[in-house]
Image (cartoon, rainbow over all chains, first blue to last red; front, side):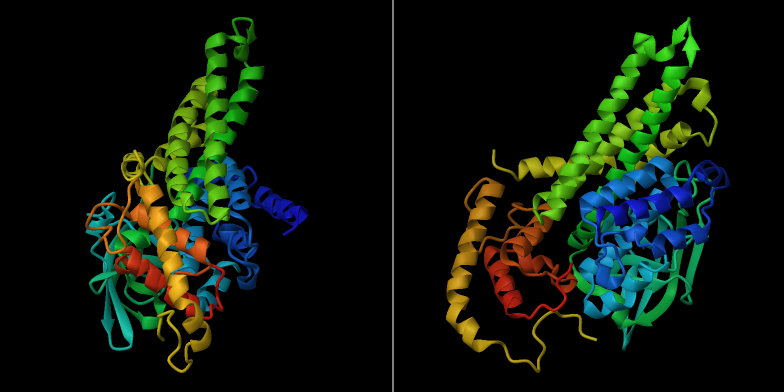
Length: 369
Length: 110
């Protein structure tokens, strides 16, 4: 894609999302047609190759796209992460016939979500109980997934579960008999991202719906989450950029004690912290994306690092931005108030900060002394 | 549908090329992998060491190995090959690379 093409697609985000995020946050709903238009422009999984109708962006380009969506609307960005991770899982784990079957729909308006978490399997995904069983030429799926981002809007669900002695993932049409999707009422953040509980009861599908299958659960999950972690990390960069813009604007115009508040040193320090957060998060994300684009093994740890740093910085940065905005940012749908709530969720989703710390510590312990 | 990325049963392996180079290739791959692991894990490992049982690698490290094998040897490790057994030892990884190199990969965009 040329730079102009990419700029054109970014402009579509501005057009479709615009300043409507506040209203979507308040109602907790995204217009499905808006998501389908973003999807049909290839923007929800922009790294998918052109042969499947995708934009074929690099991770770095997709990261900037993700940040630009995240700066406008955390809910749309969150959906984008889930959809993108579904597409990545299909691309990475599926064979050619699965690519042909499922990738073109995801670049032409079909919507997808990924389900990992279960009531008893959050940070400990090894406790996953969803079962994919063979039954003749079919497979049958039974399980209960929770907090599946985007499931409310999805046409396809990529569901991870036990498969024989090992693990597998399967592409489940959301309207397959036995699938029940119930939106989670009133989430704290990314309120319109369509988080839902998904029940799968005797869902029968052709065996060909299984992505690979018979793999190691930890490897499977690590593979799929690598994309999600980079995506969340870039989303946090966007969130920080939105906060920075709002706080800077306010600090320049709001006057107290006879001067714009940015002239007061305690407020100025908040602005410095916010800029630092945005820059540090951006550098970590750029590094992870460059590793990803180079096919470097370092990408795996760099993605964990980027997710950990960006989400922590976003949570702290949003809190500081709200302090600068004070009452001007203290109503529910304000961009900084949304960021404050959305960022907290980013410290939880796709591996909590604590799980990220454990992975990073493990990396230290397996590296040369 | 079979999901295995192995050579289709009706297509004989390219015996000429494989016979000429497989032994050298394997030795080279094994040597390089031992070097990669020694550098990354901070100590020499033997080709038959069970890397998971010895605690030498975690799933993140295993994923790094997947990416390393793909990048260093130009192979695509498909979903069904993401089994722990394929990465358990240097010997297993060497065999995996040798097998994937003989496969005509038509769909290598992942």
